[in-house]
Length: 545
Image 1 (spheres, one colour):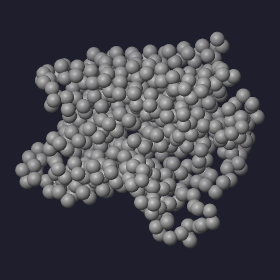
Image 2: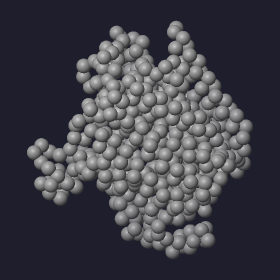
Image 3: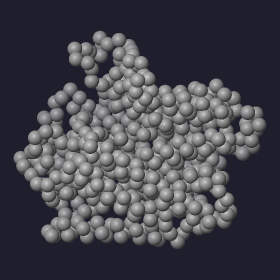
Image 4: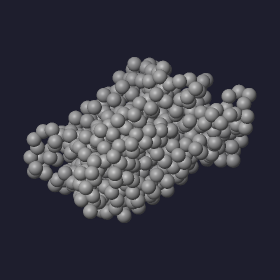
């Protein structure tokens, strides 16, 4: 064993010892449900900020965004930051104050106050299913590192599709069980403080990657630009997607232009409209993300952490995309192109999902490489830990405590949430294994598309109901909300092609960046057609004062 590898293993072992130690330390400080799920609302704003960033810069983004930059060779994905920031302003000044005012643990409790128990359970059920799919699919991402390491150690014996599935599946199960253990023991505090450690590690990894690549491409950034000459290379803003052969934007009709925009993932229109609705849904109606925000001491600190995370996202996203673009140049025109042992020197276009892992394994120095690998795995564990905590919290408060007799004693209720944490770990493992199977047999699939795709079908329905609840006092009812949410889902399912054969050919196929917006508008429009019963209006008014 080389000293480089020994140093890597030592760093990884120390890192995981620190993570487990944090979980054990906070296990003694969970005296009740509020403490376990919300940290007693005592977390400082800067730690909440770090936790939000850690959730957003998960292993999926850490590998997926450089892969997106490598594939597209431009910054158009970063356009989405405009909507992300705008949505955070709305979340900070509308959603968060409402949640603090109602003193909720599960944010779907707010919907029961406004409409009734049916809407609460329906919304919570949508969250449970969607978050399970999204978080489960993310579990596969860090196991890409293990496949890359295998390929480097056994270049003459690469894993086939089935071997990749079993290899990554075993790692996926192990990571999930370890995470379930320390999350069930330490609660949300353990997750947030490990997030703080993880974000520092990942910032260091991103900074080193940029420095290394710029130093090993002749001419640095200016030298890289010489090789990026396609029409869309290095673009930050784009108003439309690729046009049909022989056509220009000016000669296309209005409907053709609209169709082109809706069928394109990243455009200015998607940045200011589509991504705003995406972030309103993920940061305003998703228990997983909002639960982090509600751990802050008060609504002002929570809002500050939320807004600052949006500002911090901009340079971070530009950095990870730049890494992907520089990796393309490095492996095709830079120093890396001359090394036959590096994967990009081989014929054919590589899997963009693996380009950054290859870089980490092949070129980062010993110790730092081990720290990055541990950080990526631990970031996945941090994201998974919050998901498990939020899933267990929502299930227990919105369903279990209503269906089954549970003692009012806080310790007994915490035990229920801990058991639910382990149960949801099993659910996410099944989803993760399914994703690993699909990816192993379809290596060209985009990581970002896989992760965001599941949100697009259902979160529009969720957001539509929350907007009606927050911005009106007399619209929406239990029956109307059910019809509205089903309508929103069905319209998105048809327009996205999820239900083949139902969409007329003249309608565009809507990309994932537009699906939440479409679902929200349909859901809200239908829900507004129903009036809230007077008795429920009076009850809601009494609660809010």
